[in-house]
Length: 421
Image (cartoon, rainbow, N blue to C red; front, side):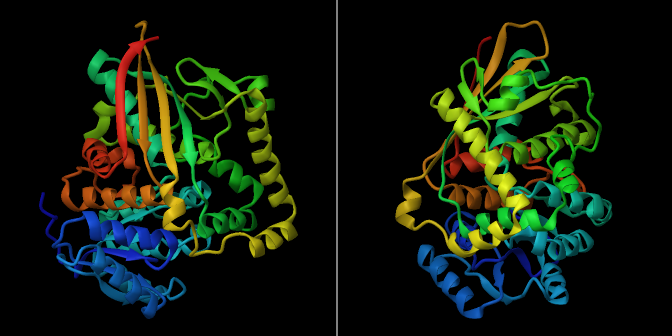
């Protein structure tokens, strides 16, 4: 497919291309996006950007190579000028709660399509509240959380609902998505983001930001409850789901829930997507595969206690920052090759049928490489497809089947089927 015509200097810019994920995004573009793409890599250090450009050239010398743009997130004027040069802008500069607003605001104002890889739901909620009206007026398509936070859960849920609709002609009721395998070595940027969030957001902002439907454009029926909620799950984190097994609390669950909740609301309100709406009685439950009850309880309480200590003890955050992997660093190529990601999920129909949908999705490799795939393939979908979205803040699920197909071609495989309840 051809890239949309526009009057900008670049089709795409990667901002933060010298960071760990930014480098992977640049490499993904060099390997898999159209060879005539007019693109640039941007950041603070010209020397580091040149090194990234050389890597991209070695990966694929027979393509247009990236231009180099010098821009610092602290220089709002330069970021604004950079945004005005491009049709699509990929922001890979975190923590977003500290450094993300300048680019988000500039893209919304300039009508430049924007994507990022944040998992900071309170920040996304704040940006949506501040700038969605601006983006609607300018025509900018804004798609935050376009990485491992939270694309797999979002598009797996979309595929489950699509399968029920197309195979059984029914709406979706209860969806459970399980992180079946999540072998990832956290990058310095991810760790820095977690540590920074506690110093930026108040308890109330964190609570509101991680409410499952806080980003939805429409309210949800408050009487609808998680079918797996209860005292056992609240205390120990564990619950059992047919065909998925014993699950415990997922470290990505609360972030993913906000994304899926927004998709639910958007698919009802976007005129071109109303036929894809999941249903009024939709519920969504995240989990992570547990080997047994003891392991599941340990995982749950490790998450709870770690987050509590980091929030309540600022000196602990300062101390931790000195000894963990630093921003810009991450797993080596050899370590990354041993990583893997797999999700499984089920969806029951909002009807009396005894059938349900099941999905398995997997990627053999590092989660950060997968994030780069999601980000760049979402960008390609925006560059090439007639999305019928207008401007505003959207989710990867709004990109539909063509985005799913593109990610599958890059190694994120999915299988769906209808099975007995």
